[in-house]
Length: 239
Ligand SMILES: Nc1nc2c(ncn2[C@@H]2O[C@H](COP(=O)(O)OP(=O)(O)OP(=O)(O)O)[C@@H](O)[C@H]2O)c(=O)[nH]1
Ligand SMILES: [Mg+2]
Image (cartoon, rainbow, N blue to C red):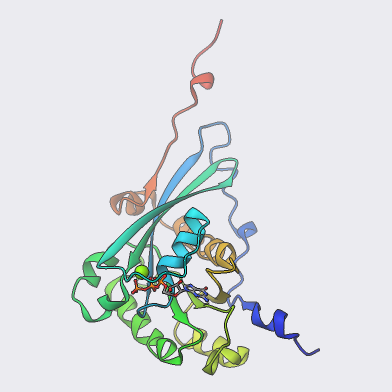
C-alpha cells in the first residue's frame, strides 16, 4: 500500500525491539519510595538542525522560529514518571553544533548514558555529518563493557520537504544498523512529532543496559540515585 504524503511524512522506524515490557522495574522495591534515576543525555548534530528546539518542545512544550545559536552547552531537566515505582530524570545536554570542531566534546560527553544525533531533513549536508558525530561520540564515551551508549537518530523538520537519503526508509535503516543507532525517527519540533516516542525508546534502551550493571558502576558515574528509604508513612508503627 502506498503511503499518503502525510503518513509518509510522519513515518518513523524503530530498529531494535525495545518494549518496556522487557525490563520489569515495578517489582524492584514495590513497598518503598520510588527509585529515582538520573540519566545524562547528549543532544548533538550540525548547526541549526533543531537540537535546542527539540529540547524546548520536549521540556517546555514550546517552539520558536527564531534561531539563536547555542554557545558551548546548555542544560535542561525533564522528569518522567516511568511507572509507579520509578522516576527518571533526564539531564539533557544541548551541545552547540559548532562544537564538532571544538575540543570540549570529550568533557561534555563524559559519563553520558544516551544520546540523540539530530540532522535537518531539508539540508542533506547535515545528514552527511551524522556519521562523523556518531563516530566521535563512540570514540569518546562507551558503556562499562565497551559497547556504544544507546543513541537515537532524529531526522528533524519533517514538517518541511525532505531532501536526500531520508526519503528511503530501507537506506536509512541500513545506515542506522551500520552506524549502530538504536533507532531513527522523523521528528518535528515545530509540530511536535515523535519527540516523546524517540525519548521513550532511548530511555527504554538505557534502562535495559542499566539493569545489567552493578549499582556501584552507575553510582560511581553519578547516574543513579537509589532512593530506597521507606516513606514516612511506612516507617514504624502509628500506634
Ligand atoms: N520547520 C521547522 N523548523 C525548525 C524545527 N526545529 C527547529 N527549527 C528551526 O530551525 C532553526 C534552528 O533551530 P535550533 O533549535 O536553534 O538549532 P540548533 O541545532 O540548536 O542549532 P545550534 O545551537 O547552532 O547548534 C530555528 O529557526 C528553528 O525555529 C522543525 O521541526 N521544523
Ligand atoms: Mg542550539
